[in-house]
Length: 491
Image (cartoon, rainbow, N blue to C red; front, side, top):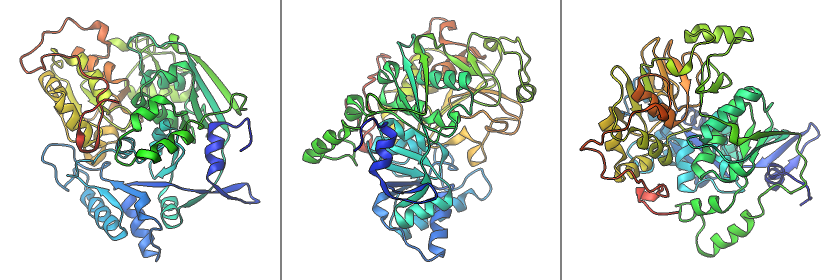
C-alpha cells in the first residue's frame, strides 16, 4: 500500500475490484443492512427481476422505521398501509434467507444502533444501507454510507457497487470539551460554523484530541450528523476504545481470529503525512451547549445566544415557520413537547445522561415527553439499571425501540404548531408532524428543557427532590453496555 494515504483512501483501496475509464470504481461490499421502509421493496424488486441475494449471510434487516413504539405493539401502524411494509419485509427476508430482527426479537432496534452493538459493523469493512445516516457506523473505522433502493438491489445481487471516489476532508477537534458539552454539540457547532453544505460530499475523517476522548457511542453521534454536513460518509480511526467496545460482541471475531483482527485494525489510520483535499480545525474548548433555531441543522447557535438576524431568504423563511424573531432569547422559548430517541441519541449513554438530569424532577405541566430507546437491548439494559423508573417518575413515556418521531414515522407526530425540543438529527419543516417546530439539542438539554417547560440548560434547574420510585443511587455504571441478550458487562 502506498504511503501518505488517508484512512478513507486505505479503506477504499482495500475494497477496490476494478477502476473504469469514466473515473468510477467497482468496490466489494462486505455488509448490506436493510430496514422495512426501503429494504422489503428492494428485495421484492430483486426477486421479480429474477435475481437472488448472492450472500444472504452478509445481509441483515430490521423493523425500525415505521413500526409503532407504544407498549404491546403489533404489525399495525399509525401510517396508513404501514403494516404492508412490515409484512413484505418479513416475507422477502424469509425467502432470501436474510436474518430479520423482527418486532419481538430481543435484538431488534434501529439499524444504526443494533449493527454496532452486535458487532455486525467492524473496522475495515464496507457497509451500505438504504438510509442516509449509515455514516453513523464509520465511527468504528468502517467505510459505511447510505445508498438508494436500486443500489441496494445491486449490492445484494453482486456484493459490489460502482461509484466515483469522493475527495477527503479532515475535521480536527482539538482541546478539552467543557462540562456538559457533548458530541451532539460538537456536530451542531461544526455545521453552524461551516454550513450544511460544508463537506461538499467529501468523505470526512473526524480527528483530534477531543474526538479521541469521546466514548464509542459519542463518536457514533458525531458521525451520524456528518450527512447533515453534506458528507459522503464519515470515519474515525479505530483505537483501543473501539476494540474494547467490540470485544465479545456476537458478530465480532473470537480467540485467535480476534488477535489477528486487532493486528489489522491497528493499521487503520491515516498516515502522518497524508494529504487531504480540505481540512477544518475547531477549538473544542470553545464549544458550548447548542440548540437549533431554524429548519436546518446549520441554523444552530449556543443555548445562551439569541435568535440571530436573518442573513438570507432561507433564514427569513425559517424564522417565519418557527414563529421566531431575531433577538429573541432561545432559552426563554416555551415548549410543548420533548423527544429523546433516534439513531443520533438513543443509546444507553444518552439515556443515562438524560436520566441524571431527570432524577428527582418532574416534566413541566403541559409538556408531552417521550423516550424511545434505540434498540430492545438498550431498553432491556436501561431497565436493568432502573433508568425507566427515572423517566416514568419524571413524566416521560417509556417506549419500545424504533425510529418513532424522528421523521413522523408510523404516522405519529406531535400536534400541529407545537414547539418541541428533540435529540434527533433533522429539524426540517414537518419533520415531526405538520407544522411542528423542532429544535435539535443533546439529551442533557432536552431533559432539562422538558423539566423547565422551555428551552434551557441543566444549570438552570433547581435542586432535585428524589422520589420513592427512583433508584437508590444515580451512580449509573457508564461502562455498562448492551450485549447479546441484553446482559450488562464492562468494556
